[in-house]
Image (cartoon, rainbow, N blue to C red; front, top):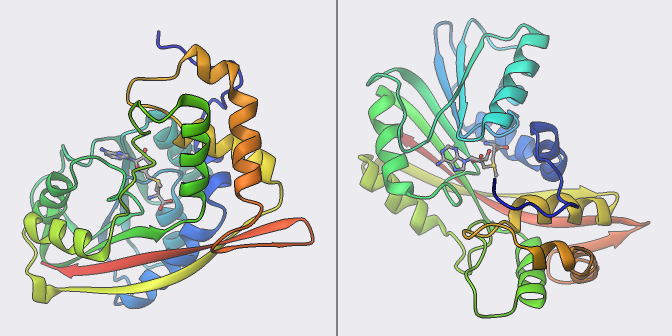
Length: 274
Ligand SMILES: C[S@@+](CC[C@H](N)C(=O)[O-])C[C@H]1O[C@@H](n2cnc3c(N)ncnc32)[C@H](O)[C@@H]1O
């Protein structure tokens, strides 16, 4: 079994939900405001569903008779969404599934929502092809990405400080920010016409009451290297967490008020019609 530092958080859906606070929901509510209301019989894909923020936000709107399919590559996250849906008796089916290898039939969905995943799921062109393929003609795809998140530089700093400058970066902490043009281009490669894609920005604020706890969750999830965790990561765990807390005490997009840190994050939202 791959080495894991003893301090690492054993990630479940609830940890991702805690890490994200309510920023996904804020952005998803904005997205849903851009779409026509759901109609009876709509079949919706919550692609790369994570802890289920899209599904949860849709269901909070008391939609008509819809069906949601929530999928993610991470089995622990899918299990969290399955349990949440069962508890609430939501019309949701879940499956562990790669966004690059979606197993649903062509033209299955009326809406396909890939929320905050295109910038971190690997081959985004192949993911876009799958979104296009599984959408009904006339259906709407939504893809959102973060183009600014203050914590990325803080975690990169902790990475370099504890691991040096020479090795690979964590896959979830890329040096190049994903941009609106990258999202547009991926959707076009997927099959959407440029004139059928519209993009807008949404500013969201992530409130963090306990930065040390948040840094622990962030490093456990985002610090993972393509080569895996190492003994050095275990030895320098506290140094990494201290560094993240220190880096996030001030900077562009960071405000600390009464002990609570508020981080400004900027999302690009693309809505594409097939
Ligand atoms: C930042 S989270 C966003 C989760 C959720 N959609 C939201 O908006 O809160 C990104 C998600 O993408 C998933 N993911 C990463 N690579 C993937 C892939 N190749 N196929 C499917 N899901 C993937 C991760 O497991 C994670 O749940």
